[in-house]
Amino acid sequence: MPAASKWTDSHCHLQYEGLPGDALEAAEAAGVIRMVCVGTDGPQSARAVDLAREHPGRVWATAGLHPHDAVQGVDTILGSLDAPEVVAASECGLDYHYHPANTDHAGQATQKAAFAAQVALAHQRDLALVIHTREAWDDTFDVLAAEGVPARTVFHCFTGGPAEARRCLDTGAYLSFSGIMTFKTAAEVRDAAALAPVDRVLVETDAPYLTPVPHRGTPNHPAMVAVVGAALAAVKGLGVDEVATATWANTEAVFRLS
Image 1 (cartoon, rainbow, N blue to C red):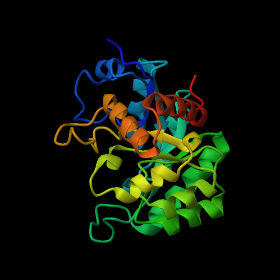
Image 2 (image 1 turned 180 degrees about the horizontal axis):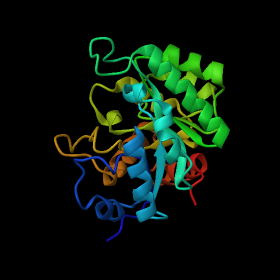
Image 3 (image 1 turned 90 degrees about the horizontal axis):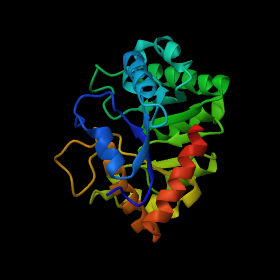
């Protein structure tokens, strides 16, 4: 029997290895009708576009250069960014968690330049912007201040606390919550979710990563966004259907889904 609530997974990587082969069917059975498939470099963005073309009305694509891959250059995503199936420059931003210990990942200066360029591309093409920020809040806001915050901006997989949430919301951005909010160690994320207005929140899986409790140890997939939505509803003291309806509308507005 189909689920009663309709959900949109606002951020998943359907093109990555590790998802179950029946992920789309399982999503539909769980009421997850729409998915935004996110690109992280040139080839992955192109594959996201291909999947959106294969599943019109169910899957939309983004094209972006993840901060870890910023050294590849923004030119590598331009071909995908102009595809009509693309709804955002995504995912881009800053991630200082591994740098400089791990030299496989781009350095801070390279990340900042690539992030700024993608903010500019979002402005130029009137696209949404989806931000990945990890241990780089101040520099993230500095880049946004210099480039201007696009009207439709999302902080994906929000991992900050109430202070960071207020800074994001003050820019006019949306906060997207993932399975992290079900983790025992994520009390600050739940506090941030509690204060965020219901018309400024999205839900996502980031599949195949960040499987929510109680499904830890198994690959994440879009069907589990309903679990994230239920957790968000509990934190906010709202009904699950109310959160499903709100996040459906919010995602539609941010990405101009039709």
